Image 1 (cartoon, rainbow over the protein chains, first blue to last red):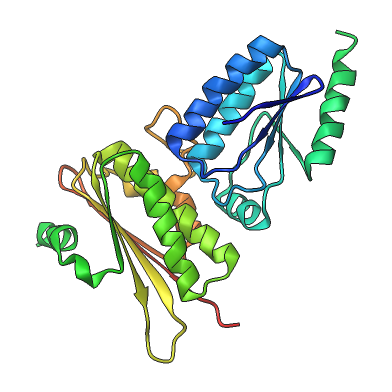
Image 2 (cartoon, chains in turn orange, green; image 1 turned 180 degrees about the horizontal axis):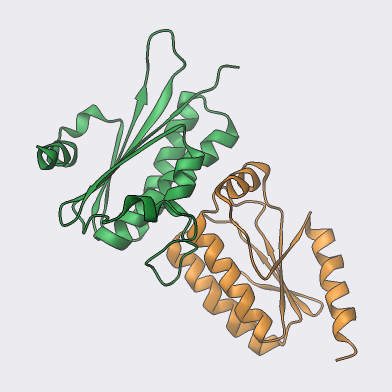
Length: 120
Length: 151
């Protein structure tokens, strides 16, 4: 999975079907990258993702919780309307994950997290 | 009698279904989901419903893989006279079975460590009809259907 560095953030454009193994590998890869780059925020762009089920949701939340413990926020952007509808209907709550409308909004959110962290 | 019904579904002729996916490996979950999505698209479901159906199949296939190690996902078109077409999804396994069905349909209940516990209840919410037959030590069959809404 390609992970790009944008400023002090990591950007992950997810462009493949998220099977269980892929999502598990992404988690490992992200944690390593957060440690290596000391990124303040990770932006996961899921615009191309057509199905997010309960396990993928669980793993994304878990990854965000782990990242948070490393001082890094996780922002999800680009959730497609049918995916949003399905997740809401199932009652999925993405804990520890901030949600942005699109990539631009995600960058603004990441910036605001950085501002908030400055005093610390 | 009950066992015969499960056997009939698990070993029954696969040609009665448009899609039969044997779930034995983790990758098969994604395969089942993709194939369900294609068939739902062919039937003419809306994108929202295609996503619901694919997600429901994903949950069912994962339950088979997790709890029974192997089983089958069987999917077919349902064309009934005067009715809008639909899709039927059956998940069948000879796994450990479910001692308390009420309990597993409770949102947030799970016996798996890394899980939200909303898989089966989620499937029930996403599909139009939902039936589950399970016997401890024998296996589990989930039969679920979604009808295409008239436009």
